[in-house]
Image (cartoon, rainbow, N blue to C red; front, side, top):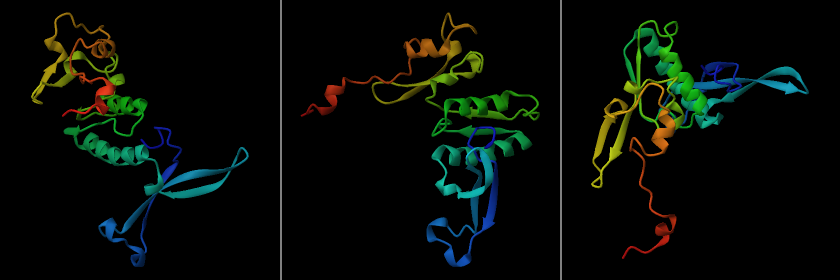
Length: 187
């Protein structure tokens, strides 16, 4: 998944840390993970660079953690629930993850993915059916209501879910006050 997502990591290496250099913050984890990158001179690859995963982008780190969970659930079957799937991930990568679960060859044990997101690009009718989309909306007291796109009249499989959502037809949009109100005193 790391290489398929165009992170420029060609492989991963896990090494034992030097026991004298274990940090308290590492919770005594004896391993250190490295992303292995090509090193270039002009247009030629001249070697490898081992970059500690702590120095990789937040998105790459997130994909690494999610990737392990995804591979595990695909092997065993079952359900994987992820809050904010899109956190620090490019929209194409979140789509890739959803597509993995929908691919019968990659998901022969019918593992399920349940996730929350603010990524409107996932409201793609070619990616997700209307019965798979649920919207959460808070009322004036802050109580959340959860409802399916199937609850709406006139929504068909060819409905542009993303455009209708952004137009407010499904609710679930924040009601943002004017930006001037941010700096106005509310005595």
